[in-house]
Length: 419
Image 1 (spheres, rainbow, N blue to C red):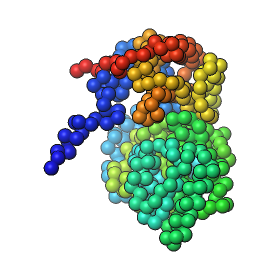
Image 2: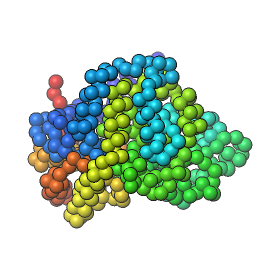
Image 3: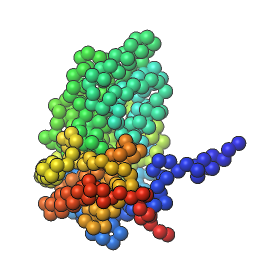
Image 4: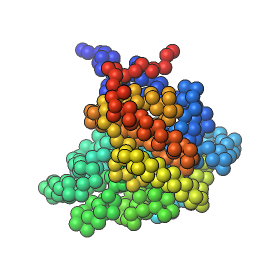
């Protein structure tokens, strides 16, 4: 019999294989200082484009005060136990009610984390005869939720309505053949890698042609899109057609937790059947009260979203003027597409950080195909014009070096944190 750990030591995985050179620099880096557009990395001041702190709430004085006051009043232990047994409170129910109203739904349920929340939602509502149809570029949490599903699933090409219909026809035919089950469609309000919105309005319109329920993961759209900030459904004018609207607090709210909103009867069913919440400790009171404050600010301070979009459009316009390919983004998420290998990408990251003091996330193989590089910049309301201009200069100069072959190296530079 083989030792299961022996296999883990022989094959560290596509990302783990680089850990001896990358840990603490390219992967698991440590940003220090007050959360904002400028932080320290390995003792150096950096302009940071890697935080999903869209509205700049992470260190907003009102948020810090609300968090501190709640922690002083309740501590992190309250309430004790799972909500179903002993961990419920008026504040938990108030936050659910206010979230539901904000996204124009009857009710909502709080969740401790977005990742486990969407996974467990899929598990709660889908039986073995049900079929799931989902976008090919859905987030990993959706993919992992699909792994829990014991029934069939069909994937459609990203935002491709023709292929969506093809998969819906396959799903419909199978439902008719087995004479049991229904169809759940899952897509995203904003795709976090490319920054393009899901085709929610077009998919929702096909409800007249096919029978299905629609779940939308709007982690990046909540707080950033729509007239009030209620997300991609509001922005596209189809919020009513979204049967279950999901988002996390980890982005525009700069907090912890998530929620799922929809018709009261369905939310009640999920509340009593979602295993990740039934068997988990309730969201701590300081987080609940802090999220109530954040939601209030989303509703009453539109200038935060306006500042976010002002910065995003300046950054994106500057990149396009300089000839950069930023794809089809129509949200603040700003990808910059380049050509190069893993080794070139890491050398370029080092140059950006060490010589230009720019810190941003990079995506390489195996997440994307070999020979491609994506820098993902996340503008926030906290960024300044100076941050944007310094970044545009840095990208212009490093792109010229990349094209000239200056980053051609044989191996990933050894920048691992030494212990």
